Amino acid sequence: MISDEALERYRKAGRIVAHLRRTVPELVREGVKVVDICEKVESTIVELGGRPAFPCNVGVNEIAAHYTSPFGDTSRVPNGSIVKVDFGAHVDGFIADSAISVSLNPKLSPMVWTAEEALRKALEIVRPGIKASELGALIQATIERRGFKPIRNLTGHFVERYTVHTGEAIPNVGSMVGGKLNVGQVCALEPFVTSRIAKGEVTDGDRAYIFRFSRRKGTDTEEGKRLIAHIEREFRTLPFARRWLARLDWLRNAEATFAELVKSRCVSGYPILVERSGEPVAQAEHTVLITESGCENLTA
Image 1 (tube, rainbow, N blue to C red):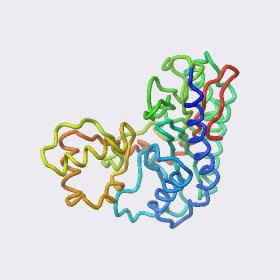
Image 2: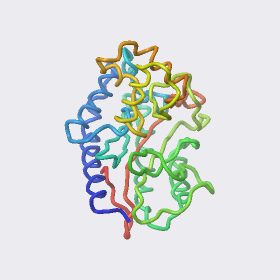
Image 3: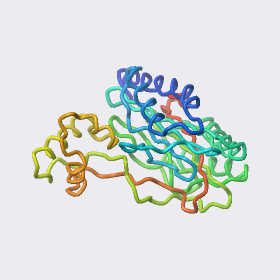
Image 4: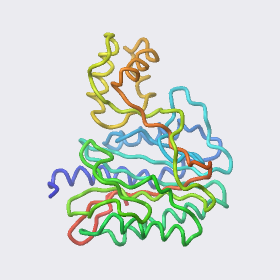
């Protein structure tokens, strides 16, 4: 069972995320710099008493996940696009994760509504003992009934302290994958929706701007050792953005030192995930606590 102390921290993180769910849509406008969205979301989390659980993801059109602005990013929100903003807060390592989609194209708005409906229907049946595969089957049926297709290789996930993704997946399609949900577990339900003509799966892009600590040993330079110690201390096992390191005034050779950490496998990257056929993607997400009577939506 989850302790009262842990529950209060989860709830505080959830309140921070719920606040952002109300304000983030105002940030997403045509022509806005993507980095401005990322940094506003991340700074608001800190202002409200939390820390980012991972870099704010801003996925435009076919980019489904894992895009956060790199240092010096000049990209802007394109006209007529669909934008996913995925963000999370933690309080002492207790994480709340959520995502919303904003359509700047009326033709893509039904995709957003479908992702939200699939999430809402899944939340209605979450309870102890339900199989994750049942949730996946309901999400898939809801999406397909609206004439769209789920992303089959993106899933919901369980959350633990300092760990955003843990345990078995919560699929977005009917499958044999996934066990039963139990009282006291915290999980994120996360439908992804794309067009009927899409492949319905994501593939790795050729870039990574989000990383995580892997190991301390492997770097030979003094600056590399200092940087990996900083990463381990500041982020533990949580993902971090490469651009965050640009704020370190003592880091003299940032590009070379970080490249050294990647080459030595002290850090590992999360490749940007792109819908295989280049079709647009919508996303919706809430984090819930499984209770005796059903679930408590921490990010509502």
